[in-house]
Figure (spheres, rainbow, N blue to C red):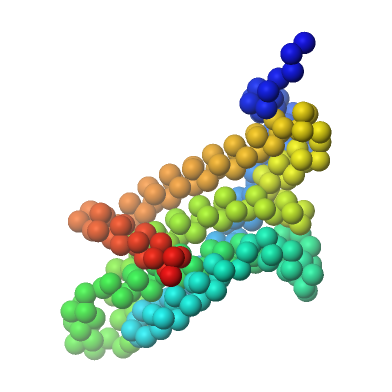
Length: 243
C-alpha cells in the first residue's frame, strides 16, 4: 500500500476527532496559545502605551522610541525563551509571556508615540486655552484622537505574537507549537503530517486574528481618517522596525 504524503497525513490527522478533544489535543493547545498571546500583548500594552503616549505628549524622546524599539527587535525571541526560564520566573508560561511581551513592544510603542504626535497642534492649543492641564490634554484630547494608531499597533503586535508563540514549545510553555514539537519527536514518515498540521493551525490562527483586529481597527477609526491614519500607523511601525 502506498504511503500517504505529508499533506494527506496532515488532513488525516486534522480529521481525527481525538486529536481535537483528547487532553493535550488541538482545543487544549489552542486555549493555551490564545492565553499566552493575550497575556503577552496586554503586558506589552501596559509597558509601551504609557511610555509612547507620554513621550508623544511632551514632544521629546522620538530618538528614544527608535532605540527602544530597535533594542527589543534585536533580541532574538528564542534567546529570551532560553534565558528567562533560568531566572526567578522559572519554567512554564511566565517566561514565555515575558519574552513575547518584549517582542510586542516595538509596534505598540511606535504607534502610541506617532498617534499622539500626529494630532493637530491646534487641538492641543484649544484645549490649553480652555484651561486644561497637561494631564487633561493627554487624557481628554490626545488619547481619544490617537485610538486608531493604538489599534493599528495592537493589531500588528497581536499578529506577530500569535505567530511567534509557537516557539513556546522550546521550553515546554504550551500552545500550538507543542503539536509541532511532538511531531518532530516522531519518525518523519509518521510525524510529518502532524508537523504540517500544527504549522497550518498556527498560520490560520494568525490570519484569523489579523482579520478580526482589522475590523476592530476600522471600527474605531473615523470614516474620513481610515485610509490616511491606517497607512500612517502601519508605516510608523514598519519604519521603526527597519531603523
